[in-house]
Length: 458
Ligand code: F0G
Image 1 (cartoon, rainbow, N blue to C red):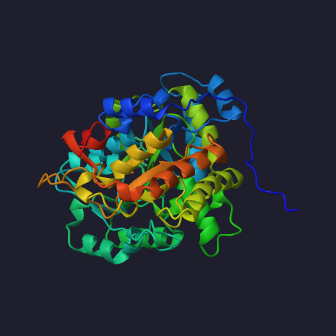
Image 2 (image 1 turned 90 degrees about the vertical axis):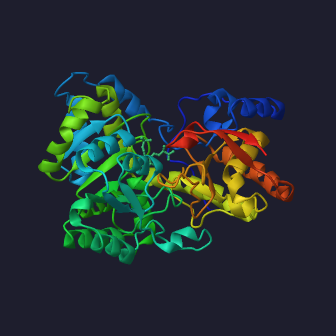
């Protein structure tokens, strides 16, 4: 008999979770304005809202916490983290920040001005938010294949080089402070960017004298996909792949809450001292002194350890296999999900699933609420609500895809939990014909509205 696959860790500490009744959930979600962000965590059974900051730290990370150096300046924890990042990426200059969007805030404060243009592959919402907040523009140059959820393409995070070049060619050089490549690309479904594409983007950028930054929240998962899917990398270690990837960038922003496997933290890393210097003042103003930037010494220690573990093949294999397990079970039950499965999440195609709910009534949000009501599972809408209004016309923006994201926290749930999610979605799928109406917005913020929006049933 073939020995089956099992996780490369055992569980040392557990946290109880409780299943509620449908009646309770009806009341809670209605009191929350049908916004899943407004629920209390005790009102959720299986929380797949995000994989950000929700992972389980290892015993080694917890023990690293005990030896954190809390000095205001020059903490040994900072140097431990700096050495680890340098070792992994080759970048010399590091600024810690309290999380990923803080890294964006600091970098863009230094480098982005009104009317600037920042091409990239489907920028994440905080990235786009920080760009638009500065009256600059994020231009999506992702390959068209990414928006066909059924198409199997190994690197749906890739940038379309022609689209990118036309942006570079048709805009003044001084209005393009950087290109941002998001690895993996969260917005198109946790899809990876190939090494070849990174190389090509970097060389194109070089031709126009423009810097490339990687939004690197899930860089290790991206490296795993390169190893598994890209020709020539089968026998290359994850750490070697990571090192090569970052050769095709001038710097990175990082939300350490993902592949750093910590609950909070971020950083910016630069190849050039000049860019680092430009960002330091903003780091001191918004985040903290240069050697802690919003992080406790203990947290920098846990992150240094997390970055080591997060770039081990065995860990990545168990992580990405679990995501794929959920995707396979859903596919078996006919549920339309983004193919191939992403690194951190399964994305359900909500407009295909709830095909009777009009786009203006937010099928993504409608499905996410249904899933919560069915089994207490919390997912996230990645659709028209998250896409915000156009900053100029103030009209609702309808992105190419209306998705519901089932994001899997790292090392937290078992496949039994995944089976609950599969059963819940299957039940809804079986009665999808009866779901015809969605939601209307009652109240919303001018930017990043999905966090606080209030809705009502139509
Ligand atoms: N970039 C990407 C690709 C992200 O996915 C996120 C966060 C950020 C930047 C911002 O980082 O949260 O540390 O400030 N994504 C989370 C998510 C929130 O649920 O996907 P942050």
